[in-house]
Length: 359
Ligand SMILES: NC(=O)c1ccc[n+]([C@@H]2O[C@H](COP(=O)([O-])OP(=O)(O)OC[C@H]3O[C@@H](n4cnc5c(N)ncnc54)[C@H](O)[C@@H]3O)[C@@H](O)[C@H]2O)c1
Ligand SMILES: [Zn+2]
Image (cartoon, rainbow, N blue to C red):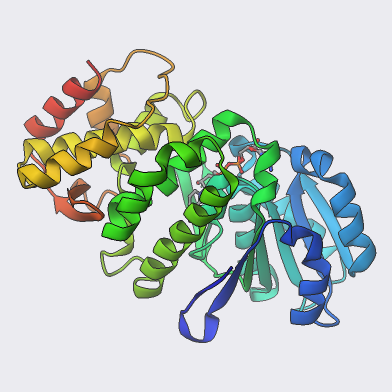
């Protein structure tokens, strides 16, 4: 299954095929003949996929670099170590970096590629569900800062995304469930057909039915690609729709210090809050409300690591970098497959939503 993100000169293909990782050397030799490659991954993936990595290294002019595993290492020190490695690898401007891992490796490698020798090409080989349906496409690259997540970065689209769903076989059930939140989210912003698909196949995807999951990843990639094509730099309001559930979600993540709750887990709670907000603001017809409810109520809600303080959750919403000059922007579902941006939802509404959802 082939897709593309069509953004003019910088357009890039997405290859989605179970087992395609085995063919990576062939694909790269064809698309980047005679080039030098550097591959960035983390310790967990390097250990799990040592044999695959060896086979890639033996077929390509490729050197690998391994970083520690975890969001806490998505920082300037690790990023700088990647640049050191690149500088010591006799690369030139035509060399190509490969991000082999989840969103953390993808974001850091992309950002290193964005600045190394003023920018080199890179490709994404995502290994988590979140990276497959979300972070590996769209061209956003970043590292975290003690003051907040993803505060330092660049828009730097990859040249190719290679999605092999077989990597999901080794992913932990918790990470799989967390990543699925982003696919599920696309059901609320990706049009009526995507909504219907998620409605019909939600449980099958969660139980990893391979064919249906493959179709879900394909549809999800199409939704994201389509939105990115229309609003590459998030200036037209459209790309913001992908933040459904994220204003609430980021605040929950901050409340639990970004450690005890995974990003996608927070997004499930955020989607529930967004739906409750739509109900309170009476933004849906009774028929649409019932249809959307029939899906939202089937969400398996992840356990929260502790009790919620709704006051703090509200306060932390203003610390999100997506907050525009102190104004909160919410993405709210209004029809199956359609959400809208609502600025300035009254404080009382948000407080009431938080107390309903977290009571
Ligand atoms: N650039 C974007 O547009 C964008 C979008 C969404 C999220 N993000 C970023 O993505 C990051 C989250 O990504 P993530 O959820 O992939 O987390 P992650 O990269 O930390 O991966 C989660 C865990 O799964 C492990 N793992 C990865 N692949 C595996 C596999 N196949 N088998 C077994 N274990 C595996 C990793 O080692 C890690 O421990 C965050 O930093 C977030 O800011 C970026
Ligand atoms: Zn997200």
